[in-house]
Image (cartoon, rainbow, N blue to C red):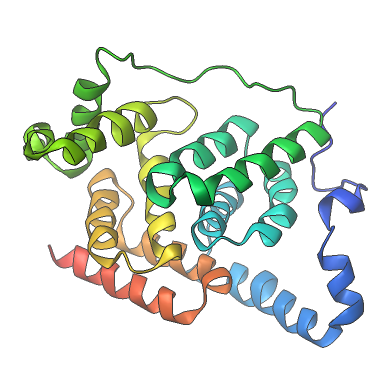
Length: 246
C-alpha cells in the first residue's frame, strides 16, 4: 500500500522541515502559511485544480532550485492526484531546461520519497521513439506546438538538431504527460529560473497554441509566486502579455 494521501499520519515524511520552522520561526510560518494556503491558493479567479497546481509548483521548485520545499511538497502532491509517473516525467524533462547539474539532486530526492512511499522503482518505461525516428518525431512535436515552420528548424545547426532530437524527440514524445502538460512545465521551468525571457515568451505562445490560454498562464504564475518571488513573477506576466499579442 502506498503511503501518500491527504490523511497520512507520516509526519516525518510529510513535514521534515516545516515542523522545525514552526518551532523556531512561528511568526514567519504564520505569514507564509496564510499567504500560500489561503490568499494565493484561494484567490478568486486565480485558482487551479489541485493536481495542476501541484504539478506547476513542483516544476517551479525545480526551476528555482527549491530542494527543501520540494521535499516537503512532493508527498502532498502525490496525495492530491499526481502519479509517480507524472512526477518522474516532470523531473526528466527538466534536464533540457535546467541542466543535469541542477536536476540530479531532485531526481535523487524524488526516488527516495517514492521508495519510502512504497513505490517500486524503476517505473514502467514511457518512451515512444527510437534512435532512428527521434529527430523526425521531435520536429513534429515542435511543429505541433510552434507551427509548421519548425519542421525544418533543426537544419539550422547542430544545437537546433539536438533540440529537436533530444529535447523534443527524447522527452516531449514520452507518455506520462500529454503535450499541453509538457509545454506547461517548460513554462514553469523558465519562469522560475529567470533570465530566459525570450524563451519564456516563445513558450508562453506555445502554451497558448495548445490551449493553455493567457488567463490560465496568469493563474499559473499567481500560484507559483510564493516560491519564486515578485520580480520573476512580474517578468513572467510581462512575457505572457507579450506572447498574447504575437
